[in-house]
Image (cartoon, rainbow, N blue to C red):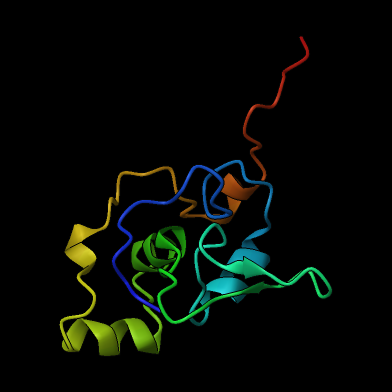
Length: 111
């Protein structure tokens, strides 16, 4: 897995309004989490399988950095020069608090 992605993709589960719960986002971000668009989907299990060149999900990296809680591999890769947190787009619409998880993208309001 590489740490070169700097912005979340348009379908990132870490974007505000994705519909994922805070708990789910924390669980997936606790270790390496490949960008689902770059992983191979196992048709039988429905699980996304990363490969050696899969980029780490930038949304997950930003999510963790916003909380100042990088996981161990992020720290190791940073020390080895394989990850640079200063290159992340920290202005992207990535969830930074539980209350942002309840908002849905493209939700229609009823007045």
